[in-house]
Length: 139
Image (cartoon, rainbow, N blue to C red; front, side, top):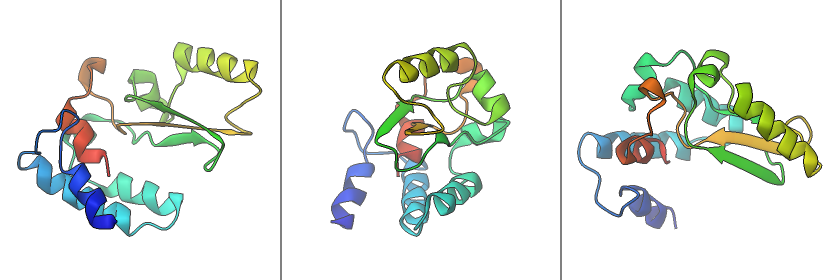
């Protein structure tokens, strides 16, 4: 089972094999994530992971906000400038709108929602993350 999962992460989102050094970084991310037993261990592994160049220019690692294990999970693409500054996903205008939307369906970050991103570091100028950047941190 684990081997099948490893084989699935060795490809970009369009199904092409990962090139080096992205392949090595994705394998390292997979091995680090595989050792984690708790969300705190995963957070520590992500914060020490150096396989994604975006981390070098980021102010913070933006992992998550809310209640881990909640019945509702919201996944954004990548942190923007405000998220990078505060170290939390979905803050600022988009975060306020999300909070209002969640409240309308009886959810809050503090009670029953978990919010994260597909990528944990802000791409320069809020550009769209590349498939290789996303593939690197997918594990």
